[in-house]
Amino acid sequence: MATYPPPEDFAKRAHVQGMEACRALYDRAKERPEEFWGELAEQELFWFEKWSHVLEWNPPFAKWFAGGKINASYNCLDRHLTTPRKNKAALIWEGEPGDQRILTYQELYRLVCRFANVLKARGFQAGDRAIIYMPMIPELPVAMLACARLGITHSVVFGGFSAEALKARIQDLSAGVVITADGGWRRGKEVKLKPAVDEALADCPSVRDVIVHRRTGSDTPMQAGRDWWWHELEQNASETCPAEPLDSEHPLFVLYTSGTTGKPKGIQHATGGYLLQITATMKWVFDLKEEDTYWCTADIGWVTGHSYIVYGPLAAGATSLMYEGAPDTPQPDRFWRIIEKYRVNIFYTSPTAIRAFIRQGDQWPNRHDMSSLRLLGSVGEPINPSAWEWYYKVIGKERCPIVDTWWQTETGSILISPMPGAVPAKPGSATLPLPGIVPDVVDLNGNPVGVDREGFLIIRRPWPCMLRTLCGDPKRYEENYWSRIPGNYLTGDAARRDADGYYWILGRVDDVMNVSGHRLSTMELESALVRHPAVAEAAVVGKPHEITGQAVCAFVTLKRGDWNHDELGEDLRKWVAHEIGGFAKPEQIRFTDSLPKTRSGKIMRRLLREIVTSNTVAGDVTTLEDLGVLTALASQQDEE
Ligand code: PRX
Image 1: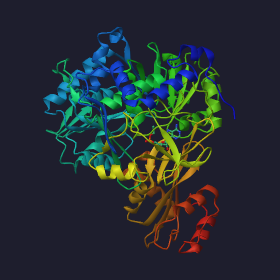
Image 2: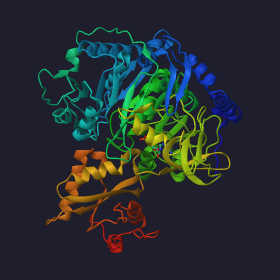
Image 3: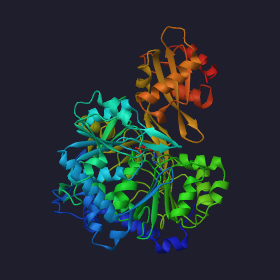
């Protein structure tokens, strides 16, 4: 197995230099966690008032820095204004059509204050909830930071979600305000957002106001008394707005993610602990330096964008780059063009994107000068060693370490990743846990499985950035994460630890799929499909996919009728896009007379997975109700 030690000149300048320093940090955090995090919290963050306890742990409920008063917006903006960072670029933004905005810390502060004053004037305050449904434009972080400034808990809904999905989130959160835009640009076309808001709001009595930013300028009907143009409300808003001193445990945001049931889970994060760990990982993992231009290509609608485009980089005083559109517009070299143009130093993307770049060919990156790059990162799914090698050679020119970062919406920050100036990389492994993180690989009884054995990845101790609860459902929080292996956090991933202590993440063990690094729940997809009038039953499984890691494959039985399978297949795909969002569209719809089930009536997805992976069925089938079904399925040609 090839290993890649940190390049010498990189290690010499790194925040954490060499394995000894890395181990010392890890050991200290493990032996004296409260002292470790307490000291770091004083060093890295601004507190209006100091906490009384670093950690209060009533398993599975944690409070970090309880009694401390803090504000995320203040930490991301105000405190930089009295330093040389005041005129530093906080955000460099490029729109898909090629428009560009560079916002210094002072300018961003002014925009955030103005918008916070707008929210205030509309009567919103600490404890209220806001839904943000926007394209990747600077007003998205402005809206987040304005909410954070006042203590309004925000929930960003990815712009690719449909009206139905948006509605479910608004209702679950009982949000009082929706912040949106007319639309955004993707692949040269306008993706409208406001019509989805209008559709969703037919059924959301909690929403008093809709604030709409004008991005594309297209025709946008506004409902009098409910809808307001951002620029009009902002006209007379003052450019200063004090940041509220909030309790460290104040919920900063809720982000919905897929679980194992049809209902998405509202992952709730707090303020102080969250800010601390994402700020620390900016140094430990991204080795952030004052002069770096840092680019994370995620969408802010997912946790990666929250932690590593907005809160982490800004709290750390970085220059964070944001790009609105698709990687292949107008040509497949858009990302490389951006790296060359802005002289990006740190580049953080997903294995799906990397695999798509490999397919497009080396000529696209090769025509650009990317010598500014010094560190590369990967997130969202396991990266296969061949994609890792390509990233290392073709993008990093064998000079740049790669950080393969493992984490989840729930964990808030990166938990397992190399420190690039210290830990030798092994392609395909997220390597070692970061300071304060105590993972293990265990069997269902919680016993460690031993070296090189596959098992469940758990985290044994609470960490500052962990989710606090599921919004409105503490019982589900407890059952989902903490009860299967009592006292330990169950990640839902399978993993293996090798003789060097390196973690190899093997994928999900539950009914959650990972498509292009986006989490999708089989149950959510199945419930969407059976809501279609033609569908009797549906079973959804992940099919290995060369680019996206997994693709959605749906097995469907139909109600009585004369159906045209080609048309219906297309119709069902559109239906899923309507119910959840375009990104969740099944790649394959396979029609079948019946589904394989156990005697108790449970659909045997394991067999379906085998069918889509190999088109044959091995394994144990003795619990099957109807064996004939399997053969019919296995031999069936795809309907597509
Ligand atoms: O299965 C793991 C996979 O993505 C899941 C978390 O998804 P989500 O909450 O949407 O957050 C994605 C961005 C942090 C995990 O349970 N995953 C994430 N990063 C990696 C990974 N799998 C392998 N290697 C990674 N580096």
